[in-house]
Image 1 (cartoon, one colour):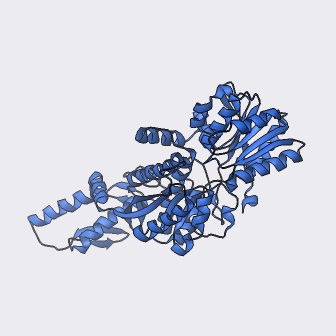
Image 2: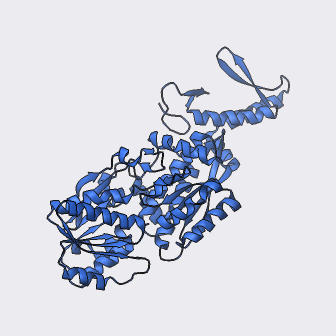
Image 3: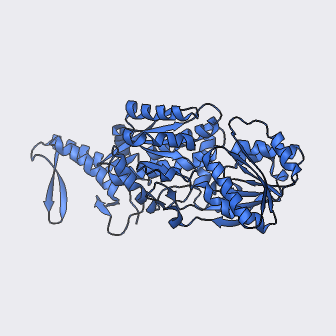
Length: 469
């Protein structure tokens, strides 16, 4: 059964009848609100007859005025298009924060985050979280979201300053960002005392272990993919490996886990370099040392741009082995290096890369739709973190509706698991729950192999829930 007003599905027994129309609860509440305004003006009143409520004019006199007023009331309550226009005009605003680098070396990632928050908010304001918009329904009325942002330049100290500014100047209950583990850890030091819920974009396993009850972690810790990656290398005879890892804890711990597992399976690590990819612009010397050791594979535990640069420089000096690329690998890096130069290399990927390579696997079309809207709006393909934060905005907006509050961060956090468990949000990454430690859980990763200029699925990867709780 569908609502005659918004077209959404209605569970049996949950329908409301009005003037011969079948309405969902949200649409019926909007009509009740319209009626409440007229009743407050003493223009109409309700009268109970049996199990029905009749809408009547306030007085019994009035002649032509009575007929004119009746026509006026009928027009308000039955013209659905006009009702939506009235609601749009009357929407109140709740501000949400976006904290990420718009400038500096990580601007591509940070702007992808900020602009993806903007897109999600735009779509929610137009259609609602469940297609019953506009905006979100909280405390019996509709609210529109407004994004206020802060450019932290990728500096953790500025991330802290930005969080304080967004809370003190704009009174935001939730902040999307910051980007990166160092900035996330810095903000975890102040967010609870500031009374703000935030989603730090960190892939570190330590981020979820700090006892912060107002924190979401939108990516499963990367360290847990080290084991299946090492196993895949051994299965293919790639027993000798070299590794380049960023100093960021998430990337260095990921690489170390890979090393431990590879060696436990009989493999050997010939070289391990830890670098600051924000400052490193030339990998030729590192790759020359690696090439001399004749590894079967080089694991690049780096962000997307540095992965592309390191792979290109390895190929420049004549490296003929394989690469293991991590889940930050994307279309931008692919264009820089070229898939034809990466034959036989492996990729630990998320839906982001897998669905772009195989759109037919994107059954719901959420990633395809997001990418088209982003490109149409901003003119380029975003970085992967944008796709992650896009779904978190929907989750938080729906949690506000479930908790029936736009101001209480603890209530919004408590309602977040249910927002995912309902299974009705347009999520690119099909997460199904929020663990007690704040980790958003459920979406699998994928192990891919580059063959004939394409990505071939080896297997789906999933970390057991009990390991993460």
